Length: 92
Image 1 (tube, rainbow, N blue to C red):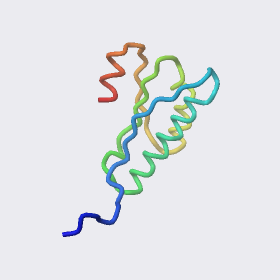
Image 2: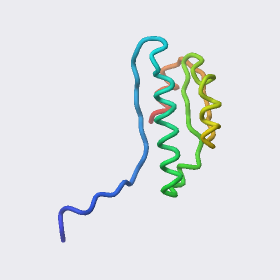
Image 3: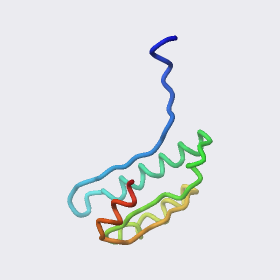
Image 4: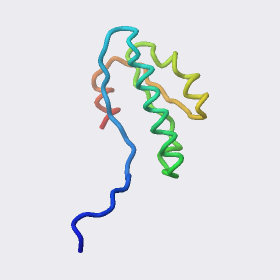
C-alpha cells in the first residue's frame, strides 16, 4: 500500500473574507470567485454546482452583481443582514 496517491480535486468550497476600501472591488472579486467555482463544479458534474451562489450582504453589493451571475447562467440567493449570528450560520 502506497502512502502517496495521485492528487485529485475532491472539493470546491471556499469560505473567504475580503478586506479593502469602499469601491476597491471586494464585491466584484468575490462574485468572480464564486462564479468560477460554481462553473468548475458544474463542469466536473458535482451536484453542488447546481445550487445557487449564496451572498450574505451587509450592505447592497449583491444588487450590483445579480446580472453578472445570471449572465454566467447561474442563480444567486441573497440574505441582507448585518447580524453576526447570521454570518456564523452562513459559514458553518
